[in-house]
Image 1 (tube, rainbow, N blue to C red):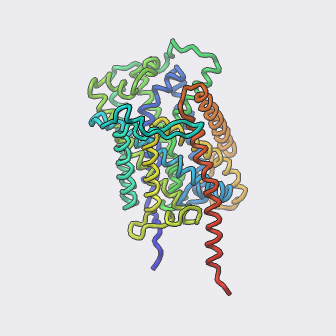
Image 2: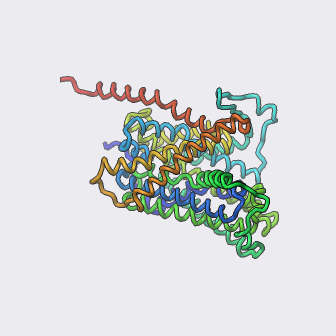
Image 3: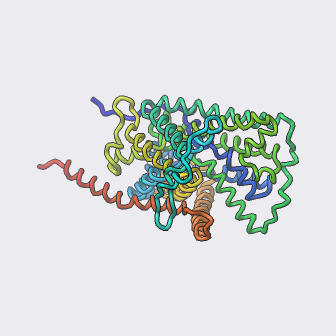
Length: 484
């Protein structure tokens, strides 16, 4: 009897929905207000969304070429194996499990739970009880698992529910993804349509800067970088498609098409929604908005606007959680299958033909992240570590072209070598600036936790594990050699 295996069930529609569904979460509903305060100009705010979208598109184009050369389940883990070898690939796979993907799932689920409070008041412990359990990481900061406990329980329920659906059926998981992606795009179009057709706003808001913002040239540059960082967090998730490459029909065509079409849809939706906010709120008013989407819609629909936005965020984040749960467990599956992780994690479920054990492990770790973190902390941690590896992935494109010059490439990066070089420079600059800002804020007591350092420490902890799994794999290979 043949061993169970993963099946190619995902078409182009599912590919696009994975990209769009993983990217569009809560960022477009929450980030624009902070970004408006950082730049103080409607034109620069628009430019930030476009630049961040183009940079993300560059990254998607790079992944698209590599994905057509290596269309295997595991995505960047498989890419890094061919680019840099097993050690670096393991370090990425470990970081993806312990920081990047699980923290992203936890962060989005946390926002979903927060917005359910608009309709249902979730219980919360007293301030004294929340402080009873404190986890201290020397030199990094403190974590409080009991803080905002009701919200955390709902977030955990969502993660468990979606993990169970994807455990039982890839088709069911992809159906959920397509459905909620269509709904969230429709929701954003509805939001923009209600605002623009209300006639209550003004197109003059697109051109008038905040008169209270007076910054030097360098301060404007720093503000632009800070706002771009927020936009990049909103665009993150475009690399998830490669994780399920081994389950995509006709991957050499559907991977690049899914990435490019999906990212172009996201850029369009983000720009359209941002301009809708600006049409209703001058930039000086936008920067002070508690929730910019609600504030903009309340000018049209009064009290009912807040409920509609809460429903949109719930729909959007639910789909975004699934957009990460579905593909991301495939990294640990690929690692386990090759002997560089626990063997049981690399097994295909005999009945459902899904990476069941990998999904369960991902679910448990994401739930632990929910208990220990908050939305802002989790977002900062996973985005920082993600962009570290994005830079290496872009550089790896040059390595792969040299190592595999004759490999079939159904798609090649437009603008090579300039596009990957621009992406590498951007990723490097982002990495060092974020690390510097985090440490400075901690030393100046503006933050209680160094998020970037926390992410790096969790990543480095994987080094001894690599040597353990490598040694165990050698022993297993030795034991299987037949004795003559």
